[in-house]
Length: 497
Image 1 (cartoon, rainbow, N blue to C red):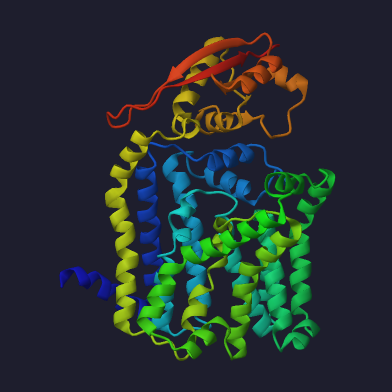
Image 2: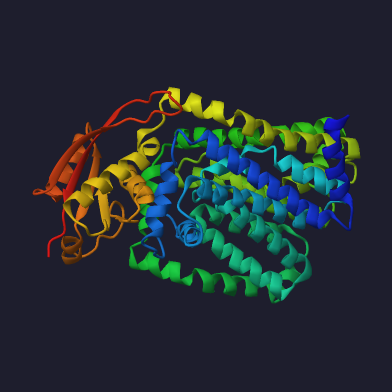
């Protein structure tokens, strides 16, 4: 059949030693492009998620820490120093994270899988929502997907070879993970447990490799640790305020939800492998905890970071969610497919490839309908109307002064959205260290609130008692589908000489 010809051609290219590396890069580039197109079209009626506009706000005031570590904000700053601030470019950055992770999976799986299983494993991960749908919201969680993949790959290579290069890379990667999100402590603990559980642990810890890893990681992480000390470990206080002080019953329930939800997200690849390979009970046991030492080390590196959060949650009384496991799955193909009794034939691989190719194509086709449905359901006004609000704020500002808008405050999500879309690229004052009073007076400020947010309006009025107040209503009509009107209060404090 003609429909199968592209799949057969792709399969042949991916298993061909002379073409496989170039072919996988082309396939991943197509994957990146299709999901970027899907996101740009399907979310065109919704605007950028507040997590994404918040990172743009942080990137305008680079520091060694915020309520989260700084890696995501630094990446955003670097990205938008090259590409324009636009929805398509932001979704491209978002999809670059899982795409890069998939390439790392491809490289790392060569240590454990034959070529047929490598191709199948790569395609199986493309069926996991963490590598497409959930990754479209760029935030501190999605940054961890390639960071965990690279660190795990380098650690396993370091453990097996004692290579100083891989040991140093593992340390840099571990520090990078911690600079992404403190959740990464479970990766570091999991890899440490894997190292200690392996029978080669004495030889490993007598070598220079683990100490090179520790030193390299400490050097990279040191500036952030200094920042934490100088700011009284404020991010930990934020984390405990949001997720801590839960009852044991509540924590246990959340932990069960974490495990069940995490398993649900990867159910499709697991079902596909069980259906295709039809493993016996003994084979399934060998999948979960292999008998040979190389595969067992990889299994320990998989299970530790995935399961240790449950222990941490129960001990500390914090709740956890299955979405946070999105970075823990890059060894899943090795776990499912590396057993010698697990057989994947070319027909199975081609079927999995067909599914991996069909899903993004179908989603691109469906994306305009998804955008219309989102519009009719009423998207979040803090996101969907940010560009229109930013345009109105800048018009009002420049009616008062020819100087550029430098600072915006008020409601956090609204201020972040205005800062994202405003041509003057202002800095955000909410949840950020404020400039000194003299600079603020010289520059002026705009405060934005929902008109029905009495708390925000009262706080803004107290900050700017002599401000010019504007009451406005904004509505977006998307493809002739009317949206819900939203009223805003804009307070303008012009610069003082």
